[in-house]
Image (tube, rainbow, N blue to C red):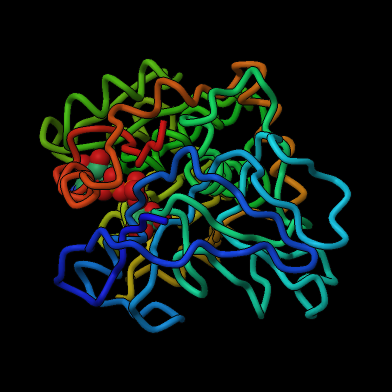
Length: 341
Ligand code: APR
């Protein structure tokens, strides 16, 4: 089969012929329809964040496709079924899994990090982790549900605990932030979106934001939010991964407010501890999504309450994958995918 192989940081991915994997016991083989291009891949390619499986490695963790081969003992899928593979597969047996926190599984396996991923014609995965993808969801665009939709869903529903009527500031309207906008809006929140790029703010409005702020156009983002909300937002979600914007997000909150950090940064942030204590502020991290929430995301996409088709602004062939990563780096679009059909 053809695959895009990662050999190490600061190198282009190479398109190569590699052996087609065979489904083992309990596994399905998926003929990949699409695999979303994600910033996590850029962490490996551009920033040298190490992958758990040493290169050569096939990257890619937002995978949709059709079942093409059934391993021994698999009964819940048949050849031809449309499926979504989750971005992270949990062990089901560690302490975190047994206490309902599979998204922080101590033995988690991620396609395109711990094992070969979806920038290839075929991938094998445990059947227990795969989800049926209904006909109403387009197969190519449906790929982004794994991660681009599920990560915001977990952040908004479980970590930020957004409720109808909450005012929610979303810092950063890239692929992650815009999906936070649409999930929070679907949950009944009044969303204020913040981004430096006018196009991103335009998309944020289309996906349900009631107000937008461009930091280039105001003296102080937190002040602008406090003015719009009559004292501060209930919830702030940081979707950039910058300690400075985390601090600004915190300043946007009213007393008793909650900040959820979805953006990734290896650096420290500076928060006023007395304010944290005296105003009962909450600061919470959010990572990925539990399997239990995938069917909810699929149902929201099936019924159009969450839009996936509009989120995919460009398709690339496997051979165009390095161009696809340039598109991601440019920040021009929302989400690009490698499409095989
Ligand atoms: N103020 C406001 N917006 C900003 C600022 C800033 N200072 N700096 C960057 N942005 C905006 C960018 O214009 C962009 O629209 O933040 C957005 C970031 O989006 P992407 O770069 O597309 O990143 P995304 O894929 O959405 O991921 C965001 O979440 O999962 C993590 O690792 C991921 O840290 C990353 C974060």
